Image 1 (cartoon, helix red, strand yellow):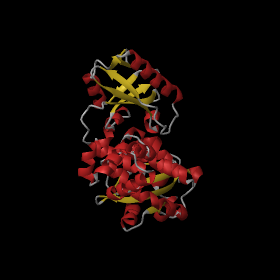
Image 2: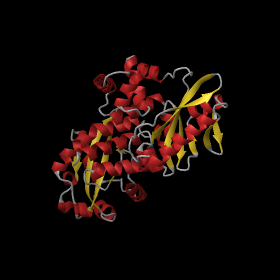
Image 3: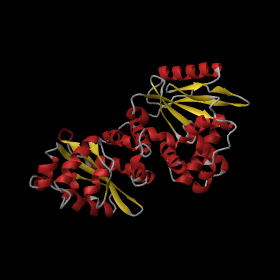
Image 4: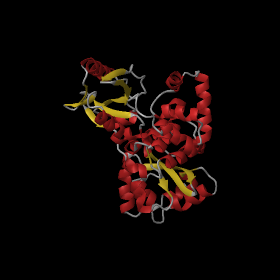
Length: 371
């Protein structure tokens, strides 16, 4: 198993906590690392409500058959698996739940799972606020069964899965967020731009900024347009270059910010950020995000919110806001004028105070708090 692929898959799942439409792809990539085809999040006693939980695309189709046939009644995997998970086991596999001889006679196994081409099974168990959850993984017939050695390697998933459920608000509050609404998790004014440079969507801070600055920037024929001629040429060049050179599904370095001149006040600042992977995959026409800042505007309260809710120091909160808005550690350090080692120490302190362990996990938490 490649740690790089595993780390990337975990980060994609943390990203899905704020962009739920990306769960099918993120989960497929995560369980693929462990040689599985499909998976879902499954709380105990969920019964028919299982269809509302995040799952891979094919598992969602399978669930319709599962629920329609009421296969969750007297299901041997649930009846035997939950007690094992609640007794302290982190992972159970098919061979913990039935012998080869039993499986030949079990209707659920033969008439449901084998009909769908699933033979192997494993479940990673965890608890969220005292409630039992698991992520069952299914292997297709050509993938075979999970081994106990493989089950051992899957144990490290449990704490991450627990945090994902917590970050997603038990998959209720986040369920309605679309790929476009991810902009509303950003503290800055943000505008989503298509390949033809037209505006797809903008968040509330961006709409407010345009309303407050009609003599500086506005929408004309669906495109961001600066009123000052030089600013407009610079803005169109900035967006055009970013659209052409977009790096793909990576956090590309930001382009050099440009000023948007306005009468009697300091210029607005515009810069371009490459899209996170999950937004790009959800919206193939999207290319970049334009961030707009008003240097004369009153400071946002995001840092104060993080101080209050998460118990961060002022310096940690300011650093955390930069990370939540898409800055890398190096860029945040450069912006704050601190050494990279100081930034890394600050990040470790934030991890400790927020009970997070990875930057993707932390950013998902911060964006939920700042929402």
